[in-house]
Length: 461
Image 1 (tube, rainbow, N blue to C red):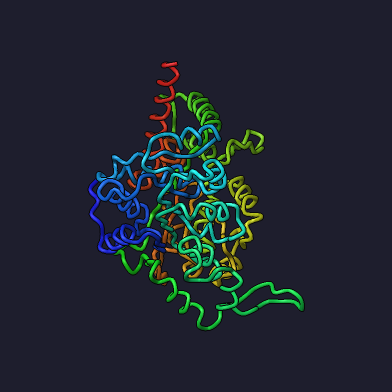
Image 2: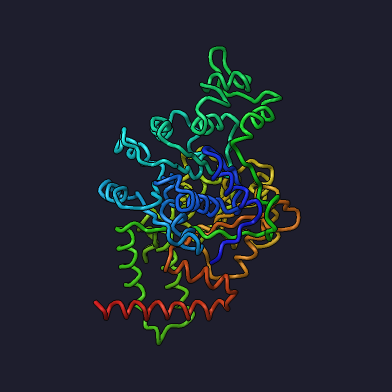
């Protein structure tokens, strides 16, 4: 596909090329990855100013997003990308593989710094979701700080630079400019721009910004930061769909494929009807989500890959309220357990009380079954983000559930995140919903195709 940048994208690309340190605080949907890759391509192959680029990203993003974006655009297809992921042996092999861009998940930054020590080879570093470096006490921040002097170019990307408080900016800007704009220490920054808030006689628990803080901080960092909101720069429909690919690790993939094949081969595709198709499809969708019910209604865990992608998605929203749709009770229970120590206010929709609390901003994550929220429920005042942990075949339920936020009175674009295990029953459902296919025909047709594929694989063994 040919990349024709919008004016704001051209501006951001040029800023990355001309500025050796830059923060792009761009809202979701503005194309941060394509912008950055285009600038990297220019810097390496047209201007010869860089040699090796390191991208630090959340695990799921590191596994899929950057490779997909490079493959998508014609002018980027030649870029060599090496994923520094997995076991230590795989990571060592990856960093020693010739490439233009090396992508590592943020948890492994301390390992990478220790691995190279004084021989740090990356002259350009990109931090995707830089707000994850907001904690100056974290191992990842301390590790990157050690090699900062050896990094010639640094780009930070995020849509929410200060998700909780302006205090979150200090560590991110420190990595960019050292001590030039927000001071040498967090203590000095705090004293300059904040006042004690909640406290006891001997201890200060929280700080609040002084009246002038926001304007003063923005003025101090404006020369190295570009901030844009999607609604200001994109002529977007009010409903934006973002498919989040779920990558199964080798062990989980093997088990998933084995169970999927066993389930598919239990059914004769010539005799299959709507009833058996629905039962089998539900089992396969449960399998995609990571757990299945036995005949005795016991829950058997298969993998946590989708749950991991879900928690990363929640983290990337940085405290923005999110409405989560689940299909099965065990999905709900596993999500609740995963969010148990997140510090977020989590609730399950049961009636008017949750509707009221959500719209009043008292709930961070609201879990709901799509059938329970399909009609007459107004949730647009509480947020603009939706996550589908698991899709279902009903186009009507899907559209009605999304309409809880995407409705009259919503003043921001609604973003629908769909967690999808690739080449699975998840992807079948997603395709049917996109094509607005007849539910029964799509269910039967795609299931028969999967059965035929399973038989073919079996015969090929």
